[in-house]
Image 1: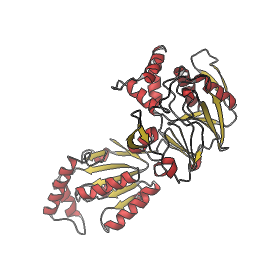
Image 2: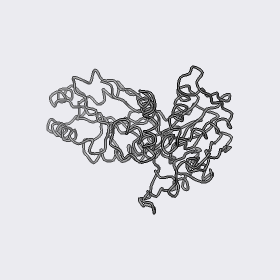
Image 3: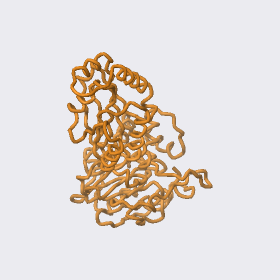
Image 4: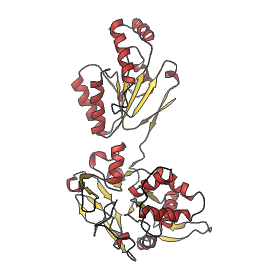
Length: 409
């Protein structure tokens, strides 16, 4: 039995006295990662918050069995955007009692132990409802066979230093993409072996970062996909997904989604491709990280941007922000959600480069910049050279899609 543990996690070891919590902690985690759940509660809470802010894996050996105690850890994990993992030790009362009797020092009375066992059984019925998404139950029969798989987060690419050419929303504008890459010093040609796709020659040392929304609305979706997928496979590009890719993924995986005109155009173009291409596209989208932290943490890229506390974290809330941004809860005259301008309040040290909401010109706002300059709406396709902080753009060859007061989601 393998239990995945993201490298930024809060792990709660839950169980009655004598259930084997400390044995698991000692066998599978480093001593510096483990905090005791007993003692000064306020001091423990402060230490947990400090560690989670730094992104340090934190294991609590012996979380009190009350729902109130767990509620605090649900909140602190959510506030620091880390995964919360509960490992419950479902050990029979008789075995716990036997282990406690063999111990030196204090331990609960048989009556108190029985209450703890009952508390655990009650908790097991509703841990996920409390907001703990990852729950694993170990028994005496399974505990010896368990292993904990410490997983690095896919967003952590700090060792990639570029230089980068970061390209905003393409939306099927293949001719403009080819022109922009050429302007940036890349070469684009049909594959030499005659297979569908493109050979892209790269300037020495440079790498492209695509900011998502490759698909929908424009006429060259499949060409864009082939070029981007080929570059990522070759190691000459990175790509984060946009909200349009996620909707396409759901459709390709058989989910029930509303098919608007933009998605319908993509699906029509995919239908003209050889068998298996749509599956390859779905697999490609599914394998992408919603954001990347690059260049020793100095650069963050995400389709819709990302607030500073979310950088390098991986929770549903972080993924949603990276894909869709933040809304005010209001709707505009077209019935579209009004997006909150998170960049106006951004004060983080990392440069954040994003797209998602089309703007007439790419402009710096508090060390953030939006590169979606509305190519598909007749604007232009824009790249940022990093670390040079130079903008390079090519104009749209025509207006492919009518905008309803800028880009509809």
